[in-house]
Length: 270
Image (cartoon, rainbow, N blue to C red):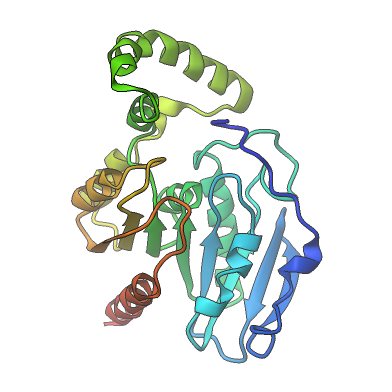
């Protein structure tokens, strides 16, 4: 399940804007080594590169269209091993997916668009690891994959069993990470996003990041967002809300995110 979640396979017709959105958006799909769907408005101040979560697909982005402000477009694609994209059997939880983020961002920039990233779960980690996005919304990213594995190993167990699991975790984890790396190439211990946030601050790279997280998230607890927020020393905002990993994001949270994006764009021009 860690590197091979259930795949959401879909009919490409569902990517077309529905009646609610068809008056605002036109859609076109291009191949840039993988399929990228671009939703355009007549005028666009920037394009939101939407990055789906683990076990999802670019259709997740299509469902987000109605939340976009005026004069904002959106682009989305399937990560390798997700949706209808089948070049790889396994996912790597952001390790290699970040390269696709950069490739999509470069393509959009070459078309003349300002690119803003918005990622959820695995998509958020991929975004935080990317080099081509300077303004980001990170929804439910983990801060350290090794720590997350340790935390979730006891999440749904009775308290009496937790101590036993913690005792044997190092041995079991060693076997798991070896098997995962052999199958997918994912190096679990290298996925320390908190350390990367510290490095961004040290290098004084001008990035703006809005971290959002559901307080009832049991898959990736909200303290991961707090750790990322604390580690990053740049333009930033942290929004915790009532919700789980996959619950609908409240409208007021989405509005705060877009306000943060507008402020960050204005700051980048000053």
